[in-house]
Length: 163
Image 1 (cartoon, rainbow, N blue to C red):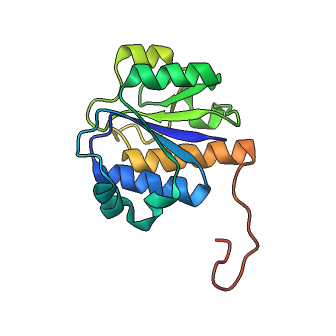
Image 2 (spheres, rainbow, N blue to C red; image 1 turned 135 degrees about the vertical axis):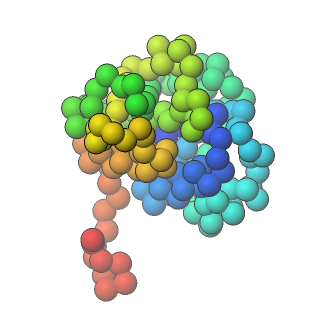
């Protein structure tokens, strides 16, 4: 199953939005600490509403703990970065990839860049610097779900139409 990982996130609201996205698509989320805010259920509930409670959240004290776990499980690390080598439309995702998002203010350090199996960017108009991290995570996750056929399926109803 796909997963989103957040490297030292700075903004609780962005984490909440990403957790909401993860909940809606039935995936887990890893938080690589330290965070730039007090990480608590109260902060996440305020940012992610009741969606955060629906997401399996894995917390890691630091990059070393996260990367050790990732390597032990044999999962591929896909770093989403404005300095990526592969445009999103050319990236080939695997069913158990971990999509790593860097911190809003600093991204990820060179050693984390080097650990990535694939570095992907979302193509944008040249004059624009970057997307909001939660928007970029949703775009990347959507493409990965599409490629790996992991979109949750449901029959449309009047209350919940397919849009």
